[in-house]
Length: 348
Figure: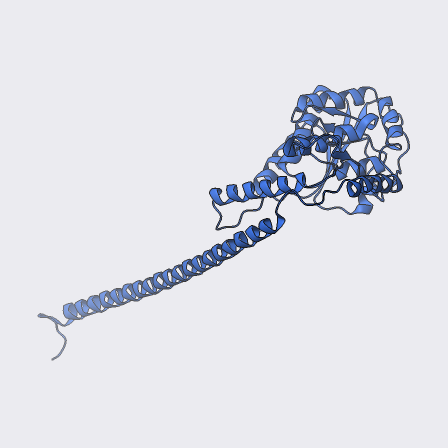
């Protein structure tokens, strides 16, 4: 949930509670709830306490326009080699640091291997950017060839010729569209054992414990030493996913069930919920206005203080210049007095 400048922890906590209550009421009013994966359906069922037969799993259809462009992995000389790729928004809970740690461990454990990493995506958090840069520097010193891109196009992603994609997310993913892209490219996928990705990958990849860089390193080492596994995974990519027609058919059947079992009255008072939401928004708007007023006043005070400091500084400079000028005059008077004083041969 986003936080505005005027909101302290207590306000955010109340907003989260209100959101949870609203979502729970709306979910329990449903005769059917659709989730894109078994993992997400389990979370919804636990949260809402709905009967299992109410929550239905309907995977998203294959809509990614990327197409496979890679042949099955071939022998690449006598030295073992592996090209690993990760793309998307680089943020801590997506776990790219776990991949970098695993890659460095693999490089130091297999010094004769030719390892390459393509890390594509922007980093918005400055502290996390610095952390990744340190890990990348260490990775390069271990002999890994790193390709780093902050931005990329859909077409450039279609040209990415990596052996395996790795998405070590620490979050509970309800679906994962980067997995969609990897499967569309016929690229084997390694994912963390959390949320939907493991059930989606199936035979097209492997999973490892979330946040466990050593477990990921072991998966990568296994593929490095036995690249024939990649061939089988690539083949499995072709059958992964659901067609748009099958997805629509499944949705239609669920909607028919929901209509047939629709209650005569909703189990919660949505009119009261809407009224309460409007009142809450009016208080938030007032708090937002007061915060803007406070900030404006603080800015005016700061500007006045800066003006006063500037005026004082200028006055001090003028005073210092006057004092210096007076000192110069005093020295000149003293010099003239010495020259024209008693005993001087200057004519009267």
